[in-house]
Length: 394
Ligand SMILES: [Zn+2]
Image 1 (tube, rainbow, N blue to C red):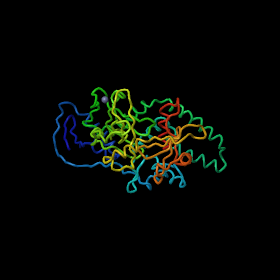
Image 2: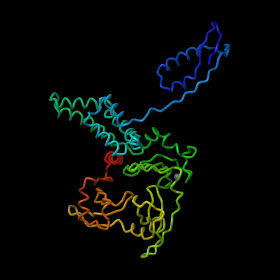
Image 3: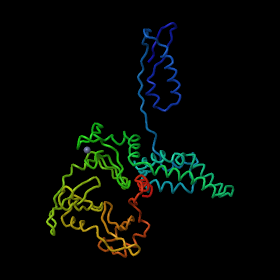
Image 4: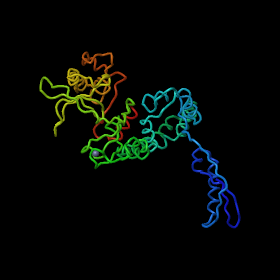
């Protein structure tokens, strides 16, 4: 817009909607913006301004494009992070831990990746600094060239790193949830109707972001938990199973499948924040009915029969005692299929192995396989540490 104003002197200036243009990321706009504001700030009330010309322009901003593996490697090279020998494993870890998903060669960040990244930059600021990795690699090059003594380097690094770990271990999980809520609130709460954060179930609570036990999943739920069990949105990290917010789980009405021939208790098919499950008996106060989650291998959940349900309710089955510590070795069914559990170690049962054929002997072998992993919380371990463990060790 071209305006002519008269005060002591008569001058012309162009007033642009600089705010809109500045989003175009043109750095020169910053100074043009200042210039225009300087001119505008000399205007006094009562100055005459005449309109000269109006030009309409439309400008579409575009988000920066996503990285592909190739462009990410290029960026890492620029920052001096990694070596040609490490790029492949960097990409592998990013995908294996579900920090990113690759679709048509484009890397899309997953929420899990954002969470880990936010947590690390908050509590391990030095380590997440780009130059840290670059410097460390130079140091390691020096070690291999024989100019740096490795023990000193490691000791120096370890002293600082263990301090970060100690501090991060004291952080309460709610603090982390709050930090993530502040950082990603727009994204997290965007799907809520009218962006209203009052709990629609109890009308008392506020919907907050929560990390589930053991850090394996995260969801938006009522802060009045356990009084109110409302969950608005579940975001699973383990299988990228983001529940469609258009179809809240509560829309699924429990389905009566039949009665348990032994006890005459009713058997239901229900849906909860962790997916579909079978429940034996009715909900009663102070009583937790036996439940069996439905493995993802059962594709057509709604056509599940009473026989299927009874089959699932047989689990968990104790296969025997572990010869080392006499603790039970259990065959159980989870959302992701059958698995073997011994204390905090869980090993998946391979899909080609019929769970009926799993013996104690086979189970012990599976517990030693590379797919076995530790889970849960050892006594006295702070929750955040355990959540971190779950995030990084998946
Ligand atoms: Zn509530």
